[in-house]
Image 1 (cartoon, rainbow, N blue to C red):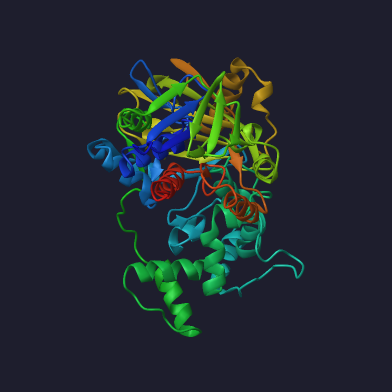
Image 2 (image 1 turned 120 degrees about the vertical axis):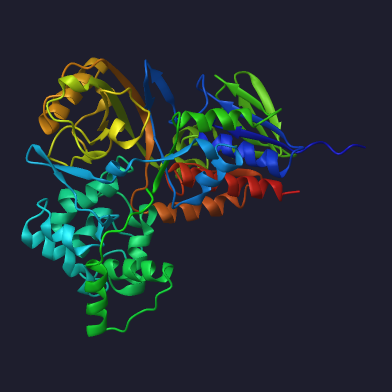
Length: 488
């Protein structure tokens, strides 16, 4: 008898689901793949729209070069010639303070100072605040941690405050880090979001010193001794001259939607069913059964690549569903504006700005035409405002598009000066789409993994679990595909 082909059902057609299908097809070409997506299009939060000569990325507009999974995927898909780096001017980022935009000093890595001059000259903090940031290099391991605090987990805000001081934490470092998640820095888990910062403290005694050691190791340098030698090494490192560096941000010439289109077209005979959301999933004697719109799909393996709360709703009641449902999500919106430069009082500099809590309604803003070449016609300024998220006063689900446009334009002009009448506006909403890795998230993942070991053939992957970036999702997707391929 002919052995039946292995079958996989993937629930969710965002970057994680599509990448999982892509790698399953590469690793086990004989596998029957069915991908179910409840929306009418694939791609999830990744969506590129063209308005006249403007190119708009409704969701993420890039990925990090330092996380190799996404870059490798683009090259595998034949998109290497479409890869572009952000423009040199985009390295400058500002922070809103007292109704104006103050440049954040160059040389900060995840908010950690790596150059002395820009930090000392910067006006974004008081002199005391800047000195307190520099003092982090000489504070002992565990400085400021209360005796009854959880050694295994700590919020972003708590960690940055005790290591770099309250002023730096509240005015820009914590909002900068939390902004990646559209989250509240007092609730987000450092261990689940930026574990490298905690690891630097544990290994080297301080974050600054840990970063110094990591960069020296990359350059093949040795580790200087403690005491005076350590002080001299730190000062020498902080005073090093600026060097031209390749931008860490990479995009695609036509927008990130190019990646989605190429992934979808790479899937060959795989069935991609849009407008077909899964209703229920249950275990059977031979594997798994997925119900969707009155149809049943039998599979050896099932991948839950949707939002965690959606996955919880289609699973049978039990421990896994409870854990997935407990992962919090928040809602955000992006509002785009196309301006004619002739109406702009003073063209903004840099790639954009962040807005700390209490400094305005927006969460952040991006000057897209400064950041990426070819996204706007000559003589134009393309801007994007970010609203909503956890820890902000504005609930985007309660406001209509007209209100979001009006509020965004008022805030952009309050901070950057007159921008003129927009040539067009666009609003994109991401309702309940931004996972929040809250305190205890890593422990929750451990429990989820333990439960999945009792459910062979069932997998979870995506932004709700081990990282929210495109590269994190691609990495998780490939890992799941490799487990499926090795299942026999």
